Every structure is written in C-alpha cells, then in structure tokens.
Image (cartoon, rainbow, N blue to C red; front, side):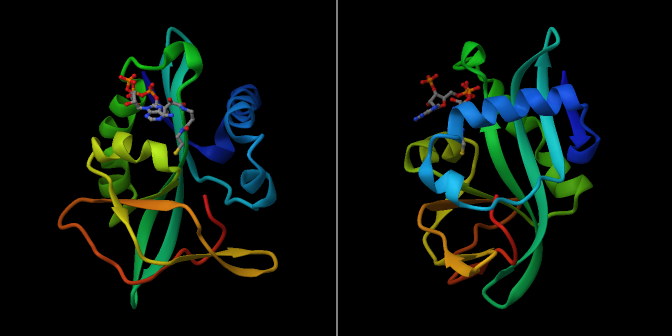
Length: 170
Ligand SMILES: CC(C)(COP(=O)(O)OP(=O)(O)OC[C@H]1O[C@@H](n2cnc3c(N)ncnc32)[C@H](O)[C@@H]1OP(=O)(O)O)[C@@H](O)C(=O)NCCC(=O)NCCS
C-alpha cells in the first residue's frame, strides 16, 4: 500500500522510524551533516504488511531554470530499508507516484540531487542528468552544488544553462 502524506501530518512514531533510516544511510557523510536541508512537504511510504518497504520525500519549490521560474517537486531521501532491497519497491513507488508530482502538485519537473552510483537507477525511471551549475542557499549564502542533479520531465527533456534552487537543497 502506498501512502502519500503531508510531512507535518506524519505520526511521530513513523517520523522517528524514517529519521532513523535516513540517519543510518546518510548521517555519516560529512557533506550531509554540514549542509542545512529543506524540510519536506510530502512523504510517500510504501507499506508491506505494516512495515516500511520504501519511502521518499517531496519538497515543493519554485526554482529558476535559465530565466524561467517554474514549480518543481524536489525528491529526496529515497530509501528502501535493507531487508526490502532489490525487489523493485523503490522503482515501483517512484513510478506509481509520478502523477502526484505532475498532476496533483502541478509540478513541471521532478528534481533530485544524487550521488554518481545512483544515476543508472534513476535513468531507468526516465530521470536524466543535467550538467549545468546549480546554486542553492545556506544560512551563510549561496553555494554551488558539487554532485549530480537529475530531472524528470513529463514532456521534452531540458538542457538548462543554470539552475537556482531558490532555497535550501533537499
Ligand atoms: C537506492 C535504493 C533506494 C533502491 O531501492 P530498491 O527498492 O532496492 O530499488 P529497486 O529494487 O527498485 O532497484 C534496485 C536496483 O537499484 C540499483 N541500486 C541500488 N543501490 C545502488 C547503489 N548503491 N549503486 C548502484 N546501483 C544501485 C541497482 O541497479 C539495483 O538493482 P539490483 O538489485 O539488481 O542490483 C536502496 O538501495 C537504498 O535505500 N539505498 C540507500 C539509500 C540511497 O542511496 N538512496 C538514494 C538516494 S538518492
């Protein structure tokens, strides 16, 4: 069962479980600890017999691509707890909730920031890598994103020259 919930309406016990998965996957990475991240707006959880089989978050944001201001859904913390991995849960959940981004939230694009090794995984789900500079905000000013960014388009693929996330990264 796939549940779509506003992040701030999640039960505390669920939030605690998600936080503990996030911490064990990413908490040891220095850049993750040193960066201030956006609070998600939505959490998508695939439950199997009451257990969290996979989940991810969406940040709703208006970003600037070249000179155009567009609404996007920033995808982050895609995690499948270890015992559920390799069974297609993350792929299936991302695929089955594309309508949430494009139809319900009226986003023109999905945007994710990710590590090199996950690029082929997202490419299989129609995400594509962009190679332009991407700027995001931190309390001490604007910064350049040093890892990868991928987009998901409903229509034609974009080849942007510059992206500004207009806020904290996700
Ligand atoms: C990435 C992740 C969400 C995939 O979840 P999943 O439910 O197992 O995904 P699926 O079953 O749909 O697809 C599995 C495929 O993802 C790819 N994949 C997963 N992790 C990978 C990694 N670290 N490096 C390269 N490919 C990877 C593999 O192709 C894998 O196929 P395989 O099982 O045949 O090897 C899960 O491995 C995870 O939680 N990893 C740790 C957190 C993370 O890195 N999240 C991504 C943040 S951008």
